[in-house]
Length: 210
Image (tube, rainbow, N blue to C red; front, side, top):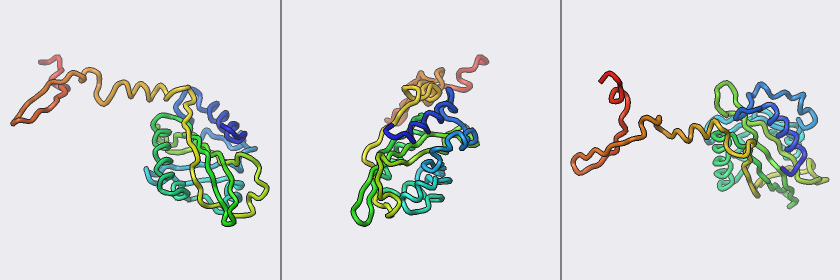
């Protein structure tokens, strides 16, 4: 985390999170991060191809020269970067990671600048990650920012950070269990008409009533 905006947002998010995979959306109090609100945003993940800005700080909109609210974040990037972002967001949702992205953007006159974008998972009405609080802030001061619209946004580098040093314990427990309960792990091979099947016994076959 290279910029103060990201560090401030992460520290607050982690405090609210506690020992959970992510805090609830309604637990984020704007007054607690008033100093960086112009650089922050809220994303809603509708599905694998749509992740919309529900809110975006004034400095972000002014810097890029466009209104972000309602914009699908994937539309900001080219095809390759779009796939990268989709994969990273999928991991963030499943494992409770924090996403860090270094971006490069350009102006029509050839000026370029670099930003750090962070994505921190939030839960909304269901016990799943479908919201993100994030920030976009320049890596250094560019005096001309806000005077020319930015376009051609590219991902320069990306990384995932696990707040507890690894994927959340809740996710780890699920992955150890696998797709079947432990008592169904033993399988038997059934052959029929030159075909072979692996069968997991369960249900009534394991009942004490037999």
